[in-house]
Length: 522
Image (cartoon, rainbow, N blue to C red; front, side, top):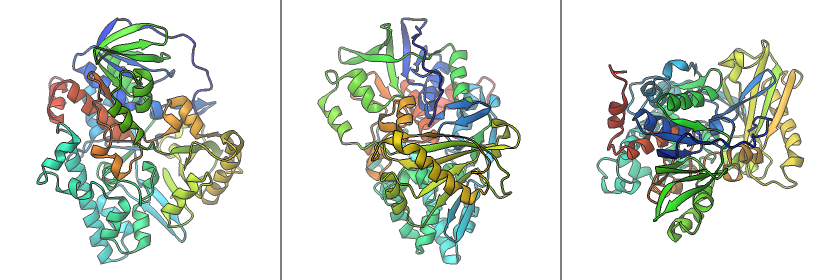
């Protein structure tokens, strides 16, 4: 990810008040979601962000006449749908009164996946997913069973979020049979249960890089929820970049009487009498609050902003057992390029069917695969007429032999060469390119080692294995991809909704929507 070339202002702003009902540290999408809902409910809210803009991984940046999204490629849930739990982002934005400010372009096909001797273009439709992947009637049956399990997981997961804790699911086997059956399952294991052909299993798992782990290691529960969010809810791109989504949430906060303070690092979270009582800004200003929600890196929140003296030993031990996700290497490019009529918004280029091998190549800093996002297909206004933006992404470790400063330009060249093989004329028409390394990710988001999904999304680190929204310190909560349910825009929006619901003392998500619905319905 790249960011603004402009250095952060040395000026640290001050809040208008000395105390608030709630303070949110960090203005990622999860934190903005929670803050906007609390402000809508009439609470006094302050959001504090060290960057010069809101959004976190959803922020956008300009390079001349090109506007790039830093990390988000597409989202689900931007329109109302019939499936239970669907249309989550649409419902949030309507309740906040900002839905009409955003223009979401439907992305269909959802993605393309290129393998040796086979290319799949996957529409945003459950039955079409079956048609594209099935080689015969037996596979079609297995694929429908697989997708039915995915739908059950999405429905049960939404209901489980309303329980007092993730562990409460264990006491209700009749209500959550699918969650309990697959709570420790990997995607690979479930695909093997339903499909015989290795190539079909690999094809069905093509979206694994969106979760940062290969099928043999990623949680089936989380993959299922993500897949359904696209196939059942539809995939969308936010015209004008996803910065507009973040800005709309920030506007909702301000219009409800809340504050968003930029270029203002938090020095520490105040803990007095064993309870979080507010924060101290880097400029020394103390600000009180009944509730502090941290959208920042969980380890930094608890070990640096709170500090070991105020943190129970068991909480420190629990953090030490968790494994952060991998980071990413990105090339932001612009080219004079005429695209084939079948070009997709998102294309995964795989050199083989073995996703474990692809992941190992990333861990070694020698990625043998990449994805190419072409946002100008959905929004030509991101670049001058006749030019396309292409964002080349591959997973990457924080540390590589020789260091990223020495390696980044060579790796960028190799990724552009591979992309050129699928998009002929890319290198000849290249007008601009800039690489972003895991260190770039870390610098602009403050996520430890540039982790792009918070904690790794393995079976042991989703559900009860992931830190909950409430911490060991009363009055301090987490929101975003370091807590439940996990990474991705859909996941962090969900965390923000759940954090607001709990803070308002509401039992069910439906109660939240009813309480905050605009007068006259809607």
